[in-house]
Image (tube, rainbow, N blue to C red; front, top):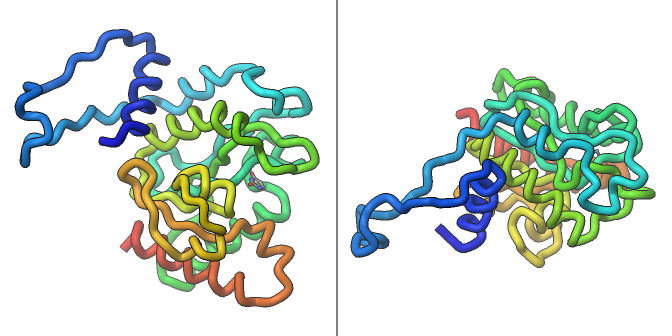
Length: 232
Ligand code: URA
């Protein structure tokens, strides 16, 4: 387990009020083949995370938000889509990806699944964002905002423990993978968040603006890859 994963686990246990942790097995065994230490996967209900978010004032994004946009979909889903942050429609309704980009995402998920013979609807996956409050004028969330809000995304992902994550666009991709590469280079490739495979693809808002069909075709390929990986 790397230091970042360990930090997230410790933060999680601290949030639960657990101050002392004991390690299973002896120190002498740690790291030896067949003796690798694993922390038990926390089975945290999502409502507890929402409860902890509360009427969040932890960063400046709370100042202009209407609703906190936590996440939507199947809490046991094997696939989680992660976007950047709520837009105007999401801020008004409190649900991620319900505006034009959201409609395109729904079409992409359901259309690709249908073509590939996978019985899957939008409601069967889980959808959320890196930040839960709308950044003013839809600007990119700032690093400190992502750091603050990201703890809740991490807890959501640990709680759902999907088979794969699909990062939508550069912000989610960079946040989850720590890569410095642009999304054009990253898309279509597998990365890891903790031990969970992450497929990177374009953000649907970008696809709505793209003039040629190239990126749309690529996004379709990426989605096919992730759907087959998860549901085959
Ligand atoms: N764009 C995002 O990144 N997330 C949403 O929820 C809506 C638009």
